[in-house]
Every structure is written in C-alpha cells, then in structure tokens.
Length: 347
Image (tube, rainbow, N blue to C red; front, side, top):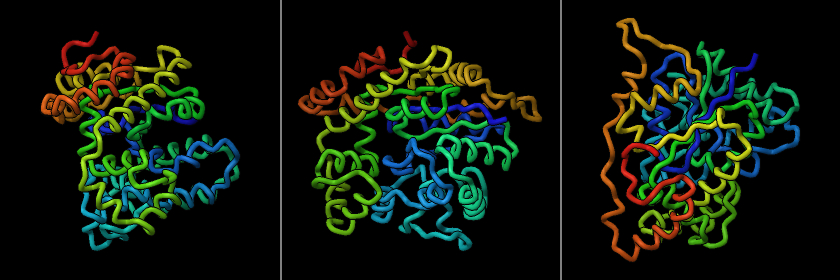
C-alpha cells in the first residue's frame, strides 16, 4: 500500500527549510527536500501519460538558475551535495541535477549511488501518469531507507498547491507562512531568488522561465546574471511575487476539507517550537520516535530554533517600505496578518 502523501508548502524564504530540518529529526520519517521545485515547471505536472525514461531525463537536468548563481560564488545553503569529496561525481560550478544537489544527499551518504539507483528504477517504469510515477518514487525511497512515511517540502510550493491537490487527493498539507514584508526582503537577499524574481519580471529581457530559456540567457547574456547578483532590484517585485503565491495557494485550499490543511506561522514555530511541532506531528499523524534515553524527537527538533531573526522591514527607507506594504497588503489580509506580525499569539 502506498504511503500517505504529506507535504509542507510555503513561499520562498518562509521558514519551510527549518521546519523540514526539524521534522527530519524524527528518524522514522523520510523528509524529501525540494523534489518538485527543481523539475521544469512546464513538465512537472503534465497530465498525459509519461514514459519512465522521459521522467528520468527530466530528473537528470540541473536548474540553470541554481547553476548560474553557484558558479558565480552565490551561497545556497540548501545545496548539500559533497562537492569536496574526492569520490563525488560533481564539482562546484557543475550543472548538478537538482534532486542530487539538494534532496538525495540528505537521504544517503552515497548520493551519486542512490541517485543512479533511483534513475534506473524510474527509467524502467511503464508509461503512466506522473502522479503514479511520483508515488512510486516516494514509496521506493521509503522502502529503501526503512522509514515509515514521507513528507515532501519544496520552496514556493504554495504557488502550485492546486496541482499537488489534484495529483495527491488524499494528501495533508502544512502551510508555513511568514510576515510578507520579511519574506520579500529575505528573498531579495538570497542570491537565487534575487536573480530569479528579477528575471521573471523582465530585468534581463524577455526570458521564458524554463530550462531551455534560462540556458539561453546564460549563453547569450551571461553578464546580465552578474549585474542582477550585484543589484538590489525594486523591493515591490519581491512583495508581489510573495503575494501572488499566497493568492494562488488560498484559491487552491478552498477545495480542501479543513482536516487536510494546517496553517502554521513561522514566528510561532521559532518562538514556541515544541508546541507547534506537537500540533504538526498530530495533524500529519507522524509515528512516534522516542530515543533510547527516553527523549522525544520533538525536543531535539525544537533545539534547532534560535528565535526570531532580526527584522529587516523597519530599516527600509519610507518610500521603499510603502511600496512593499502595498505589494503585500492583499495577501497579508488573506492570511489574517498585519505588517510587523512578530510572533505574538496566533488569532
């Protein structure tokens, strides 16, 4: 029987990576980091039957935006592939397959070997719809690792919640969200999203945000990436990007029963981690993982929180702050938030 589908969804820079690291402290749960966000958006939720070989070819692809930023020295903490290991297949700056760069090294100490095994399984799969392919991948990873269940978490996944609902109608979703002003400012400071959002908004010309389109940008106008990495694009672009994702997610959640969707505030997670993690564990029906010393995984997970990070929004010049507030206002209202929402009790 296929394992139940469980997802953590959110915008970029909302705290979902921290939450995934916390959930990974439960050693009976397989946490899959960023499987979907690295698959070309024009392919990842295709409705037609797909040969296994075609999906395997997609999994072999890098994400050109990630490659462009990393080879220029941009820091991407989510990437944990062991570039410095002499036995590793890839070196920093190589176009590493997205899943191999981020997800697989968190599952195995021999990521190249596990990735090869995964690709072999996928290639051998019959022609079938992608939802069946994805279920097979998750189930095989659970079986291979000896875990009891899986949770997938991808940055910006609230944007395509409707697709996840369609592909995994039995799924439960934890939505972690953060004050939109702070999320937008964090995006602009994060090299991959700083460049990605700027490209999406035409600051590097008319570019299709696909694997092919981004590779063409690198070939034909690589210096544009250097300029954007060094720039501070208008902050309202990041506010609108955050807001669009929230609006898309809110539309999709209306199709879900209440028992399938849980809202969690980042500010609550980092200030009251044990309480919030206990609520999430109950909602997702996670298996117990009591350590030999009698301690629970939630105690160890809560220790990953270092409290609220310093807020950036109060440091903005007033004209920038006003543009950012305007860009985020509608989506903040949808979440029941107000600017400066800093971790007080949820309403």
